[in-house]
Image (cartoon, rainbow, N blue to C red; front, side, top):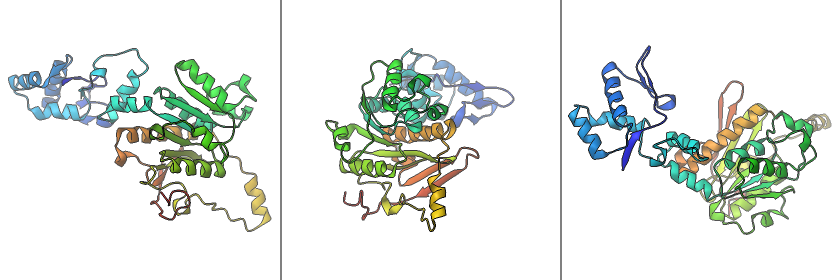
Length: 346
């Protein structure tokens, strides 16, 4: 195995000595700074561990300094990232390398996965685009909605000439413009008990992942039932007004589903006709901000799941929300319900 200074490594000398940037950044004194610079300079060429050890001994540098730089991603052993590449995967791998110890394996997992996206509105736009840049095995886009003018404030893959067209068809068209090799299946129907089995027919459930981004309770129930039945992991993504929400992240037989302990049961008990009238007037305040933020949160958990870091999947057994104005975080924890009508029998 060889090691090389990471392309994401950066050094700051003034006013304080700082090594790295982002979550791996740390302050050092002059001695450690100069020693670290020496190691990083030596590793601008790929070296094996014997060469590195000889260099450290010769320059009276402690091995722990090398290890610290490695642990903080200033040094990498991922040979795919030893030099800049003009490929679709390069920047994704560079980013994943900051988060994970197995970025190339995670990229391969994306390429081997079929993503079923239920709902192609605000969330569907962002999450389909986010997944498409990882060149998945296949995208299945499910939505019977047609594009309206009001969608154009946040559904970034649509334009004026697309009004009245099916959302799923336009998303497929736009994603193929960015990557002509994408395998995309379009379903211009709302998900239902009658078509969900057909939608999933022929897919390898061991390499399938579900995204539920629709706000229709029947769609959520139907999709959840079928995903659980076929042991397909899936994630709910959405927003509650100004709070972007993901979860629960469902791993069948392991974690809670949306219906465990009635956490998604209707909580609005109208005691009067006036209350019902007001509730029926509700229109979700869909915007770029709450939609894009929810999709970003979802991608973070999907990446950690594919890496095998289940302890870093924040929305397992929980719904996680971020206030798009204050950035306040909310967590509604849950546990798997053995009597759940959806997953209790699994």
